[in-house]
Length: 366
Image (cartoon, rainbow, N blue to C red):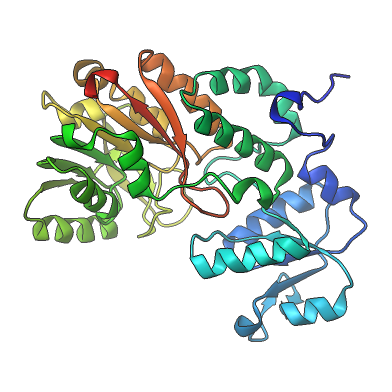
């Protein structure tokens, strides 16, 4: 039997979170309800792990029933059990929510399962063992100590579900831009996954000389809001385009959810949308910066933009958190496309660690 190769990541555990939950003698209670809880429960059930109760914050309990159980308040949970394991079933970046979760983690064993936003894969002990060489290779491609430390913490978190690995090493988006990017060099940008204009707004604010942003958003409701944002923009010209980005031209089924969960991987409200490649969208225009956050379709977006990347050699901000293996596979893939680029990993303060971004910087843009 192969030994669990924890040494490079400084861990001593021999099991992953799922093993530990299955072996736990403490009752397991879940904090939160909804789609996230449903996904976690499906994995727990598949692995023979039972949840004793569900709870919500004291002010949010209204007699709800979830999976045939009455949802309790946290006060009721504390009265019912002497000690317990808490599984967090929702995500948040709100300061008051994060502080509450951190305070729970100071007293109880709180776990945040690492379930992918897209796809069915799960990064557990078996996946870690299978992909170990690829993980270590991706780690070696990162360009600064902070990126390596963040990568290591992500591995530790994904295997253990422990919040302690997520309580440090995060930045605001503005800090990421100012720390890493030659923001005054960018004249034209491509925003893939533009949503309602939030990322284009940050570019307009942080990139002092930016004059044009091509903003691509496939969801129809979000696109309408994006168009209104573009109409109101004065200093920067915003060009909204309503297509899904992939590695082919044509049409595909798309989940029109009117929020950040809209994607080709969704199961709700499927409709047919137009598909285009980055190369088809950009044509012969010069692009200095590309942001890619397309809900699990990042690799396809890159494949469809190879000519643009080769011709323009833009700096790239790539989301690497949607699929279970994105955090290492996309590092290696982007390095293969841009072998001379410096690669930096950064993330905002979020539980679970969504919005992890790989910045690929071309030295010629310094």
